Amino acid sequence: MAILEVKNIEKTLAKKQVLHGVSFWVKKWEIYGFLGPNGAGKTTTMKSILGLINPESWKIRIFGTDGLSLEDKKRIGFMPENTYLYKHLTGREFLHFNGSFFGFSGNQLDEKVEKLLQRVGLEWAGDKYLKSYSKGMLQRVGLAQSIINDPELLFLDEPMSGLDPIGRKMVKDLLIDLKSQGTTIFFNTHILADVESICDRISIINYGHLIVEGALVKKLKWWLEDFFIEKVEQHNASIA
Image (tube, rainbow, N blue to C red; front, side, top):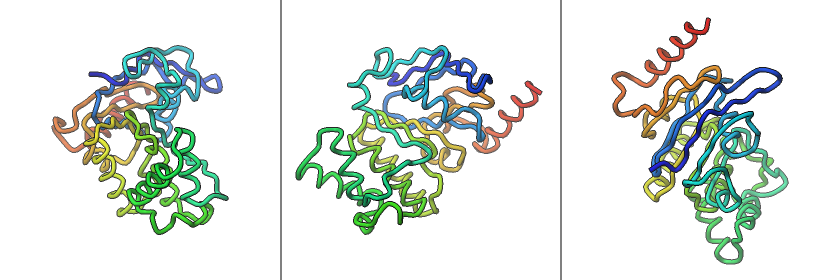
């Protein structure tokens, strides 16, 4: 069953077409990797799906309905690549602030925030101001806020960026755990090792063109890095 269907996204920025008929679908309860070199169109695609930018043409179905209603948004989590956080708040205050948007309050919110801080390994830093957080710590608290509403569908833009090996392992374990609890995860990345270890299926985008759609990671005949490089180089040669 598809939880997300994307058809024919076309987008132009600064008079340059950056997405060319991008189409794919995501199954319920899977981890889906959306891969591509820097500048390939990964973030633009994600922002188009979430309604943060308006493509010239598109058709998007989420949870079986067209478009993205307010009720649908309550069932979605999102972490952008660049986490613009309130640096004058502590990590704990920031999560309380975000949780209040979803109607959580009192002991329920307190318990949820403490659980999230533990899940992302920041229980020791909950009372520190975000301005003192490292890039990796900001990534972790950004991930925590993206799942504070227990989303059914989670969008992550470069979730491993800035993380050390311990942080990356923690995030990968968390994503696998979320999937086991029924969360569908769609994430952009160019860190292929992370994809190979946790993703069920992948797509590859290059220069705004989807060049691989819905490939099963376990059925690839060679290493993902080799597969990725071959497909990108083949496409580059075809448009040269």
